[in-house]
Image (cartoon, rainbow, N blue to C red; front, side, top):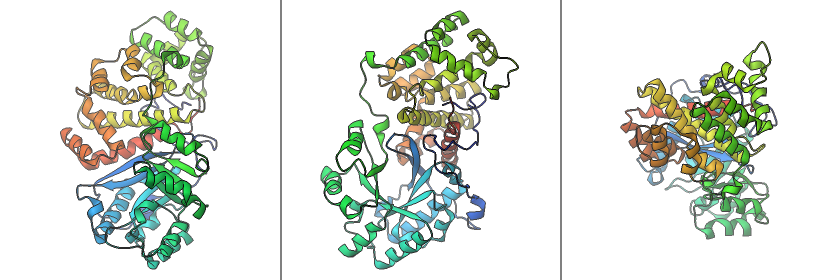
Length: 465
């Protein structure tokens, strides 16, 4: 599962993923943003927020992009929507969002009034779904449907949430025409039950059998199970988004994965400065873990002149800090083919890199930036191990500043962690406030946000144990 980690934790690789890797999509050339951008782009506007989108195995397969700002977009006129859309599209191009689309897809929100914007042609049709939103003051007309047909003839694909269009379509016939052209239909689990499951199960699948479904705002594992196990629904849903990945019920201690506990104990010994013979004794209790370590050390990428056969030799070659980082990543991947653990690893890597880079830009010294990385990396350990965070962290004896941020949301690193979480939660007001507190420009945070997404994706693509 782990790629070139040392010095891979400081830089990503641009190797392409194997076809059978989680989240991999058929290979395609990544478009050159410079060649597709208009000659003169408008200034970057607002924060472009992203949400990770998962498949039924909980692997990350796409990102959903939208702009949030203080002008309350939903209350804006159709002409203002066009302006918002164009600025968002230009911002995505300026941010070089195409780097993310080599191995993932994107869902990009636009209004129905922006379908004539030439900038839409700058996105790779095989990687992007345009999610249509209705403007507040204009209904969907036959002309809009004709515009959708024009785009679809050029290979572009579309999605929408049927519940949002009930009062924005000129006639029931046009509503059927509109929905029948959608590649993805969206169900929002944050809406009332009568607006979500009842129409889905009773009406919509039969009327639009070719459409795949995207379940948004899934808040729990139980809601995720509804999508997977409800008769008639399981074959319909293809994409999922929400906090279900990190919301969990703590497991009894007996159910905690034994391999994870072994890794935590070795990490504790490393932090405590234990001698190599103590570490060696722990590795020998788990022959598979020892095999994975020695296979990594002896892999061709490390360029060793001879084969390493002992833990003592391993410590001499890669050092304690590198071994600790390697075990941190292995902690998330002890369950083979577990899409949820891989998705949690990717989000942890994203947070870690994002926080480290913000710390560097904020003038923090090297050790503080390393600790910012650790804070992000361990911020989802409770969700991974399905125990309370204090219990998950207790064996690690982390630096006090790291533990204070994770457990008490206090101290030097707490605002950085809060900023990373606010960006994931699409909380633009909190992002703006925290960026100002850290004396960081919004455009810098926006760019660093995307850079961290790319870095985390590259770290896990391809994923080889």
